[in-house]
Image (cartoon, helix red, strand yellow):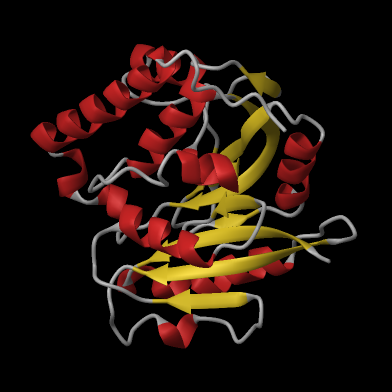
Length: 252
């Protein structure tokens, strides 16, 4: 029986043209014997614009549904995720070679770790890349450390939620992604950190595409009132989870 990693991608029509690049980055992954991946793509909406870019591959599952932004699309995709682990891959991003194997190794060798992240390089429109200057040290991330760094550094975490690799049972126990119009992945990361230790791999694991059509570049993403509300509820959830003394991921 093949062990499986479920790669989940939420996509809306403007980003569909980038799916072939994301797929190529999946094909470049090499996994240990007995492991494979499935790619679960969920359109945020029901248009005719995305399906033409979905690869013809038995490992790829494509679904559609009512538009509700990325949080709902990702959580709906969980209904088709069959793997022991879930990996996030945004439609406009690309994995680097070997990242799935590194993520898998971190959690298989450390059963008390609930999730893993990797270094990110921003991929700019001219093809150049820019790194992040606040990466943590390679290895274990203490429980609660993500929230404290996020609060102390103007609401910017030291690890990127777009690189998340997580145990499927833990993801489901937390209800998937937060029901927010944006920052749903940061909210999940804060919640995961509140109940379990994580892992950071200092080798680059993702090329994070910067382009005019990405959701985080839109003016609405930075609208002050909504942004404050998103961050307030994400923090409150993480602190509430941390205060539940019997709610801890202790491993298999």
